[in-house]
Image 1 (cartoon, rainbow, N blue to C red):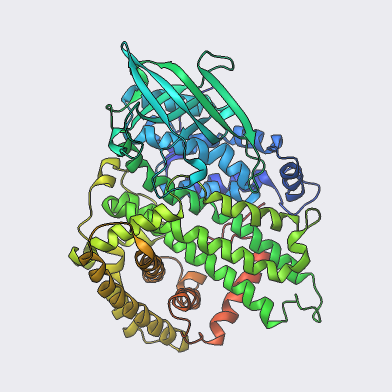
Image 2 (cartoon, helix red, strand yellow):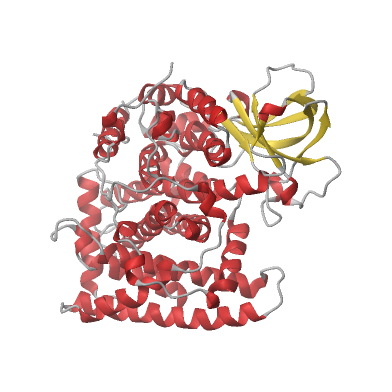
Length: 583
């Protein structure tokens, strides 16, 4: 079955409509009688299997259409919209989000980045007919040892012979198509420019030269079907080559920024469920309990978690929209997202576990989904270009930072910061491998600081201006340190470089937060229009940069707690969008 999107499927409003439909079809996550409720997902996770009813729902929704560009009959026009739709899936089950969704998109992204017209058309048809894809990316030297396997090819007539293995590929046993990177036999593995990419129809079991390796058990994402593949002189034809010979590194460089941004942004749905479970636990306890909402410790933990989700979403928003609007800056922004979001979200869930106490380990009952989320979140960050490689990419940018020109304010579009912004230019993958001559996000700090300082407001506006000034001072210190880094000989990032990469990531997140507040185009009475959330986000960022950062006004925490409880009662998401869920 193929699917061609109608015009209505491609306009901005339809994103909201599709999310609303999907949330309605899921039903109430907390309802034990719901066949798509948390209790069923937890049970399937314990049995290390996907939930069939959930996969059928996504088949009916035709989720794969979200991964296919509009010009090829799908719904993919904007990466921020793709991430939002998939958050609905991750909110129920991260294994489903990774296994049904992200695995296919990680492969398709390479085809969209450099495949021929025929390969793009065939891939679109495969996905729109319900097929799955798997990609065995080459792992950078700074990446995960767990994934350090490789493929090699040797010429054979008009084609190639493929050999090698990958130990852990999500959904390899159910994929219709494999996207493989291989280097010529005898070439050094780290010679990235020697890799080629191949788009291969999945071999049938028992095919000569192919062997499916046993399934791997994982601590998190237990419902994912992870196994390896092994090839021994397996024949490939010339038309299975994706792009020119030796262009694998270029294709991966075009695809990495996209998957670095979209994957962690989707994962906010998983963290949202963890926070919602902690709020439910706190509300169920009497006032004398240490877990009650009346206790300062519980209130602070919940507000901090809500703030961290908003922090992560402002950065994810700017990075995903930046790939459309500022593509040359996309690789750095995406590396920041890939590093910072898994770090913040994993720490967030750990802090929430203190609220639940012993119930954070529950494997059954109303709070069991919390333990599942706590196991799943760190696994979402495992994969190509993980934390170490992302920080290394940021260090490379820091070495160039002193030589970048200052952006003109008009060069940074307001659409970069607007959560409900709709039309964006199409992706230009070739731009993602061209060096930027400016750092637009950091460049917005000066004008945003001026605006915050000029605001004639009350206690919260003054606090926001003070935090913005402190962030700007941190940026000044970072620039000085970056200049010293640029003067040093090229080499590995080192501990100093990694520490500066973390500071850069936090400052970038603060700039994203200020930009979202500055360019908010919604009602002046809504939550994002007020300063409280931005005050709390900047405080959380600055406290990581400087533990001596003064506390925010008490009213900021009180307003976030009120919003937190309102969204819980009204069944709305804890990200920038406050989406109605499970209705």
